[in-house]
Length: 101
Image (cartoon, rainbow, N blue to C red; front, side, top):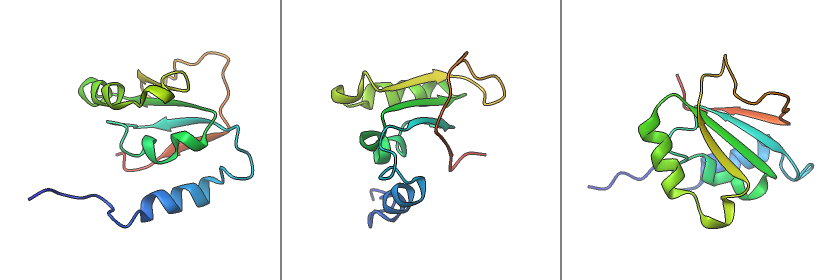
């Protein structure tokens, strides 16, 4: 049996509503605990730039492999801890931290 996560699209709909991409479409987003990018792909088209960080290299490899070609220039991933961000001098308009522990 194939497991479907959020087949009704509730997660995507709520994320886009509460992250409010519509009022400021040029958001620079930091996603903490991005994992394999499953959540990233729900909002990446609405963001100007996305930096996803995670501690698990296997998940990051999947995210990079699954990244759509049209998002290569705008969506990047790094193995990093939220306490030691590797983005010197950068600022973010929005930070997303969901489904992480």
